[in-house]
Every structure is written in structure tokens, then in C-alpha cells.
Length: 80
Image (cartoon, rainbow, N blue to C red; front, side):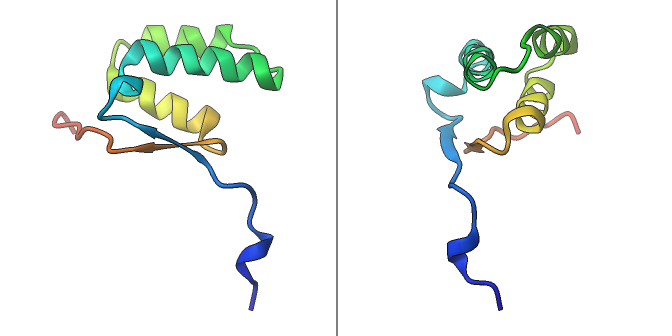
């Protein structure tokens, strides 16, 4: 049986119900993380901008940075 000490580092929480949950904050964080890890931001930024949808931006953020961050208290998407 594996023990919990083999897990990687915990994810950094982002409270989506607070000021860090707005679209500009999320995109700014994405840009900074890309810079920190040496990842190109422009394709991610283009995809986020072209999505035109807050919830799609969150999906992209989670796909790209979900190994590092946990989006907590996400609003419900009533359009699905």
C-alpha cells in the first residue's frame, strides 16, 4: 500500500470567490507562471483571449497549470 509521503508538492490554492478569481488576475498569473517555468505564454494567451468565455479561460488555466494550482470556490457555469 503506497504511503502519502510519495505524493508531490501540494498545489497552491486560488480562491476564485475573492479578488484573485477575476479574469485579469488569472491571466496575469498565467503569464507569470509561464515566465517562471520557461513556458511560452503567447499561445496560451491567444487561446484564452479567443475563447471569449470566463469558464473556458478557467478550463485552459487548469489544463496548463493544474499541476501547480487548485482553483477553489469556482463559480458554477449555468450555461452547461
